[in-house]
Image 1 (cartoon, one colour):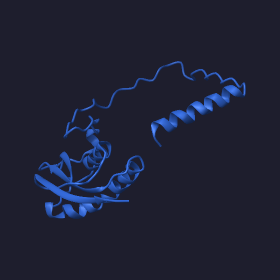
Image 2 (tube, helix red, strand yellow):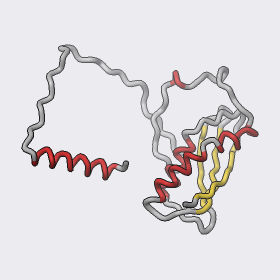
Image 3 (cartoon, one colour):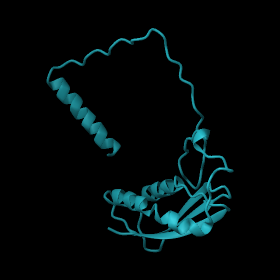
Image 4 (cartoon, one colour):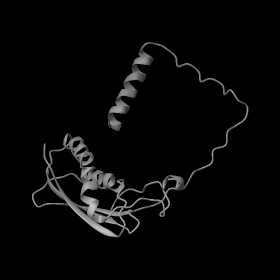
Length: 163
């Protein structure tokens, strides 16, 4: 659901509440007299593969140590990528509702020797028509994939998107 729909629904609920003459109930008083202190887990990290938005870092505990992390050969990348392609198709179907688009796109994933996705590029083929928002979301999604390869590599794959 997009933001505009959420705002409209909230406004409609507020208008209907006011029309009924009901008053909002006061918020309850806090139960405890002491305040709970919250400490930040980590600071956001700026990552700029191409023109992606900055992303927050993951807590260090969720990332396995290099010695214990299972890696795969770059020869296994086609199967790993194929397992994620349905996600790109779902993103395409959502964005194609807003704008008629379609065609073929080549994605290039730059991986470090530790299997970290350093960069994702997208190049639509000649005659293809895609919104920049769709391409950005596709690159962002690909950047979230887990591709634990054992050497630095640039993996390229093509996808055709059609309704």
